[in-house]
Image (tube, rainbow, N blue to C red; front, side, top):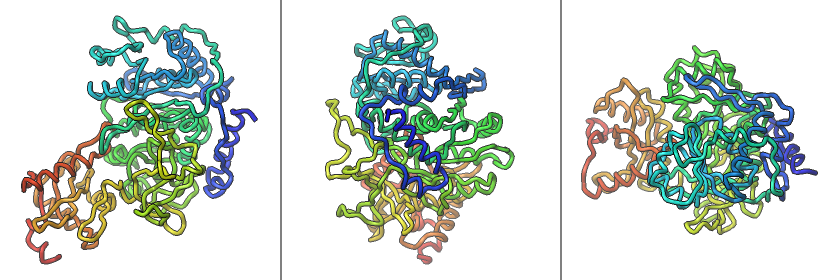
Length: 565
């Protein structure tokens, strides 16, 4: 059996059982591949003579570009030959720093064909962040838009510079790639375990880690993501994310093209919910993937006014508030399906089409994965840290982390890859997210899950977003404190703080109650995730200095709270 046939057979099982989770899990096996090049062995084979639209890029000012699978295969051949002419060799590191423009997908496919290593980077990087990526990523080639080329003016190093658009002096013109030969010949097979992608994590708690993926861990591993998304051939799939982060590769590259769907992109200067909803309606989008942050913004509009043709709607990147799910169900009669995975993995737990969704659950284990919850002693339990066994290593798990010397560190040293996330599992196999192990804390003898309290806060009409952290009261007891971002039209002040405290008290057990509230802008990573570590460190510093931050309100500020308990 050829590598293409092995991949296609695994894909076929998941597409055939897209509405039957149990059968899909029972029948699916990761293909055994010693060599594999996804762009050559899958994409080009699927693209041969295929006039279906593979990539559809639209924007308000630049119009629309549609490229078929057939044409994109040829264009990526040209780009691969061009890059080879610029000195790109197997294993070379390419920093790809572009927005959602056609060359992103062309370069990705071309780099895979060349067996080069892509280091995706967001265009929002600061100089220090860019320098860190160039140094720790051992970058030999840079591909970026002409508008971002100046950012490399004082970045030292001997690396090829390729500019898209009006490239400045000293930069190679990417447009020359389209004059290269449309026929590409690889220099031999690509080992399946050869490095393909190097991702810098978003750094919510520390300096970004370097996550190394292979020619199978993401390309083939994202068959699980394809299954969770519920994609079918011919779908028009919109993933609201930008290049540089793993979610873009998950849902804007590998998973949709594994299914044979169209990757649809709409570019904007500033996100506008009304405009995006109009785009979804006008372009007939059938499947939509967005982060909870984006879903909250979409809910600022009356969804009932938008006659969408959506069949599947999902959320990923961070836990989804139940209130968002209820709102979308009411307006569109569609249930947002939550899923779980990391930059280090593909989707490994999720609510899939055909599975009855349980309130608050992130779903069941996806085909190809075995997930164990480990307690503090390292034993399997119904509640604990989410872990993957390395003796039956799933194909979608990373090769490992790259250390400061460029060596790959195995993802675990005790037989497990530990995700750092804590969850519980019910008797029927549904998983419920509790929080990052680093974010959980104890109040008295009770463990507090910030996510649980944040989900309650999200149900209040004034709350746009919130983060719950530990705070120390006058008696030395650790108590939950909520840092809250308000929606427009609500005024921060004592009256609203008291209202929110009473609102949460009605829904939480006494030990779990929020005792302090602060109205503020939440610190975030570039991907929109809340940097709770910054809030915790600041809170610790305030406690040491016996200070109270402006805009903070406490239970003891309001008569009647102390008596009520």
